[in-house]
Image 1 (cartoon, rainbow over the protein chains, first blue to last red):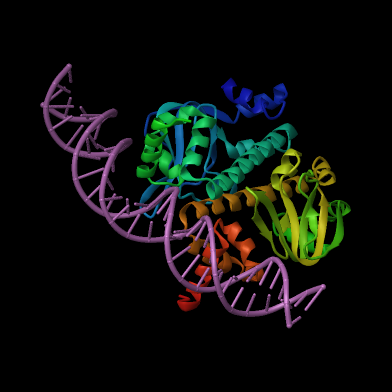
Image 2: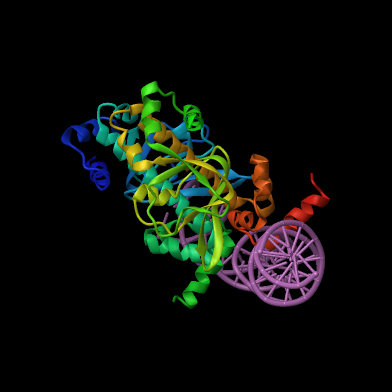
Length: 191
Length: 191
DNA sequence: CGCCGAGTTGAACTGAATCAAGAAACGTGG
DNA sequence: CCACGTTTCTTGATTCAGTTCAACTCGGCG
C-alpha cells in the first residue's frame, strides 16, 4: 500500500511514524467492474484511493443517472458531503473498470490528528486542493461552452476518453447526443 | 468585534483563551461604497467578516465584469484560491454598500493552530462548509435553469434583491437582459 | 435641467435539448 | 465461438432557453 504514501508525500512530508499510523487505518479491496464501493443511503466512513481501475460517483437526478466525479488511477474518491457531515448520502460510488482500491477508514484517520500534526496538515491540504478544484470546475461550467469543457477535460487526462460517453456527458452537464456531436466535429477539424 | 466570535461559536465551541487569541489577529475597517477591500494582482492575507454592508468578489472575464460571490452582513469573504495557495489573485473584493468589516490576518491566524487546536478545528469546519456550499452551487448551475437559480437565490436570502441587477446576472451566469426578463415574468405570475 | 449608467423591451440568432430512429458494440447463453 | 438481445452511440429534424445587438425609458446626480 506504499502507493498512497507516495501520493500523500506530494503534499506533505511524513515521518516514519506518520506513515505507519496512516497505514494502520488502511486496507485493500479488489473490486469488479460495476461493483459499488458505496451504495445509496449509506453514510461515508471511507476515503478511497484508486490503485488501479476507474471509479465514478453518481446519483439519480429526476430519474436520470448523473456522474458527479471520475476517479482514475492514483486519484482519491469519497462522497465528500456525507463524509464531512456524517449524514447519509444520496450518491453512490461505482467501479467503471475493475481494479484495486485502498480504503482509508476516515474515523480512525481523523483520530490521528491530535497525535500527528503532519497528518492533520496533510488532510487540510487535501481538502483545500479538492475545494480549489471544485471552484475551478464551477467557473468552467459557468463560462465555457460544452465543447470547450470537453476539450479541457481530455487535455487534463486523456485516460478519460475510455470512459463510456454517457457518463462523460452527464459529468460535463450535457446530453449524450450533444457529446457525440462534439466528438464527431472534433474528428473533422481537430485543431 | 464580538460579532465574529459569536459567528465562530456556531461552528466550534471556544475557550476564553481561544477567543482572546483570535481577537488578537483581528482589526476593524470602515469601507465606503465602491471601495476595494482587495485589488487585482495582490496576494490574499486577510479573511473578512462583514459586520455591516455588502461586498462582492469579482473579476474580468474577456473584458466583462463577473461577480463570483456576494457577502452580506454576517458572511465571511476572501479570495479563497489566493489565500490557500499564496499566489497573486486575478480577483478583487469590492464593497457594494458601505459598511464595516472585521479583518482577520490569516497568517497570524494560521500560526495559532499549533497552540490552539480548537482554532484549527474551527478553520477546518469553515473550509468544509465553504467547500460543501461550492459543490451545491456547482450542481445548481449544472442542472437548474436560469429562472430556477434566481428563485433559489432570492429564497435563500432576499437581502440579495437590493444588489444591482447586473452583478446578480453574472453571478447567476446569465446576461442582465435575461435576468430582467425573468424578473418581469415573475411579476406577472409570482407562483 | 440634461446627462449617464442601469434597467427594460424587442427581434433575430444560436448552442444545446429533445424526440425519434438506425447502427455499432457488448455480453451472455446455447 | 457464434447468435441474439440489450445497451451504447450516432445522426437527423425540431424546439427552446438564453444570447446578442439595438433602441428606448427611467431615476439619480452634477
